[in-house]
Structure formats: structure tokens, C-alpha cells
Length: 439
Image (tube, rainbow, N blue to C red; front, side, top):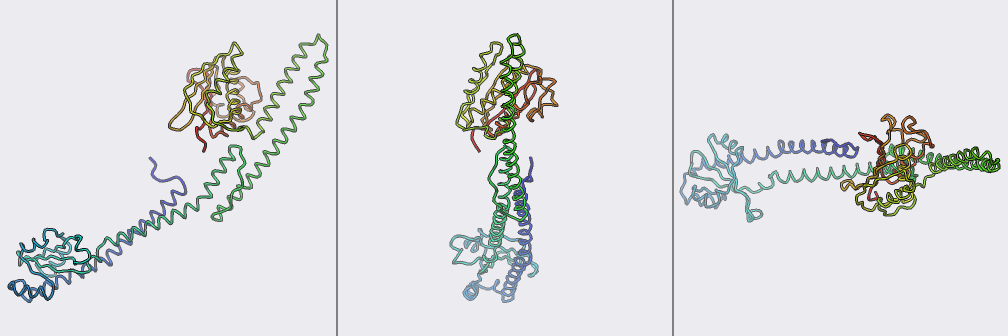
């Protein structure tokens, strides 16, 4: 499991968080050692001095009447253990560091405790410090201590947590604003990779990001211009080629009857050339998807299988499972199926299998077309979707080599993916998936 984030956003937030954490720890320790500790030591010294004064005056050994007069004058009570228990000694909390400091100054063991806070003591009553000396084991001194709540460490902790949280939030907002142009750039780059032409990006962010965005906009405009020139050139070449092909076909019609076999050969070649020209035009066109609508892929598969039934030697076995409707360009996807089925019959075998299924976890619909032919060398599989590429040695050499390139463009335009792989036993599998919902 990877702990460190991969994105620049995550890494920057993590760095800021770590720096703030170190800053908070250092601040916490600094305040504790240079403010809290000296204050606590001063309070312990005052408590020990107060007890020393009481020992010097003999208050701990005096009678009850004298103790009452001293309590009325100073607010400090001298109680027996039983009386102290009645006044809340059992609910006190002992502090070893206070006991050690007071014991060291008094030169005898001292047990120092502080009364716990209750609801009626929060505003009206001060904290009480309880001290018992080893020289007077059955006697407890109760000293009211106003202002102890201000010395509590909890407000400091809350303060540091609030400052740290605000700092992290500010860093997160800053990094989010810094990375927003990068996300827009990523989205636009994906559109360009699918053959689309996104609108120019807004130049915002740091100077480096602005320069990258400006360069991307220029590149996007250059690619769009190249695509336009390619389409125009292809259309022009196709138009120029069809004219002489038409004249050749007309000329073949004038051949004498005894030359029928020559005429048929020329007509067949002309039809092949027209088909190749059509593929050139289709590959150059960018509007390969058409209008998308919610469609059941199984219906398109059944339609294409029904069309292929006109040839008695071809057999298609359908293994279809129920699929949810997905946004598809019906004409474009039917072209994908027709191309894959045609390739399976032409280069594979007279029997093929078409399978469909739905992956609930990834929200994708899958279609697999398998033939039982010789397959394709593994070294050639990765290049089969490149334009004008054919696996001549294994699958034959007819066609222009643009069918799979057009097929991949259509699938990618649907935010899907198509792959080719050899079956472990025999044949080739062409598999593609399409998302059920649009992004």
C-alpha cells in the first residue's frame, strides 16, 4: 500500500502539514518549558512558603478556635483527615511534580493534591490545593488558589490546534488554486488525445503555469489546423482519384463480349479502390461518433449478427448477458462491430463467438469477439491499431490497414478502450469496453 501521495497537490499539502506539525510541536514545547514550567514552579514555591509560615506560627498544632480565626483571616483551612474527606478530599487529584518540589523546599515529605473541577466551582469557587506533611500525618491544609484555571494547559492546546487547522486550511486552499490550471490542462490534453479540439484554456495561475498553458493553446491550434489540412487534402485526393476511376469503369463497359473476364477483373479492382478511398475519408473525418443515445449494446450485436446470416458458411455464436443501457453512437458502434466481425471472418475462421457482459464494479459493458484462426504474433499485437498496419504473415494482406485504427478512434471517442490478444488455445480475441455513464 502506497502511503505518500503521487500528485503534486497531495505532496504539497503533505509538506505543508509536516512543516506545520513540526512548528506546532516546537511551539508547544517552548511554551511548556519557558512559560508553563516556570509558572508552576513559582506557584509551588509560594505554596511551600505559605506552609512554612504556618509551621513557624504553630498553626498546625494550635487549637480549633485559633484555626478558625486563622481561616477567617486568610481563607486557609487546617482540617483533620475525616473533615477533609467530608469537604472533597476523595475527589482530588495528586501531582507528583508538585509534591516533589514542595517536599524539597520544606525538607520533609509532602503530599500535594488539587481539587477536581465541578460545575459549581467553574465560576464561583477557586481551586483548592490540599497539602499533607509527614510531620502531621492526620492533618490536611486546604489552600484556595485563584487563577489556576488560567494556568491550565488545555487552552494552550486548543489555541495551537486552531492555529494549525487554519494554517492547513489556508495551505490547502492555496495549493488547490495553484493546481486548478493543471487539472484543466489535463482534461484538455485528454480531449486532444481523443481527437477532439477543446476551447483555448484560460491563462491563470503562476507565471510558469501561464507559460505552459499558452504553449498548450498554441499546440492545440496547430493540431486543429493540421487536422483541417489533412481532411481537406484527403477529400481533394479522393475527389481527384474517383474521376479517373469512373472513366476507367466506363471504358471497361465498352470492351468486347469476349473480354468479360478482363472487364470483371477491372471492375473488381475499381470497387476495391473505391472502398479504400472511403476508408481514407472516414479516417480523416473527426465526427465519427454521431448523436449519442441510451442504447442496449446487445441489440446492436444482434442486428450485426443477423446481417451476417446471409452467408451460409459464416456462423456466429452469441453469448449475451443482460446489459444496462449506455450512451452510444449507434451508427459508429455498429461500424465497430461490423469491422471486428468482418476481420474475424476474413482473417480468422468461418465460426466466431461474440460475448457481452457487464462489470458492476467498474460500471462498464464489455464485448468480446473471438475467432478460431491462426491469431497474430504477440510482437505485432501492440501495433495493430496503428494506421496502415497489417499482420501480413498471419492474417493476410488485403485491405488498407485503416479498419482497426478507425475502430479504436470510435471506441476512444466513447471514453472506452479496445484491445487484441491471442486466445491461449487458438484464435484471436478482440475486446472492447464502454462506460455506462458519461463523465
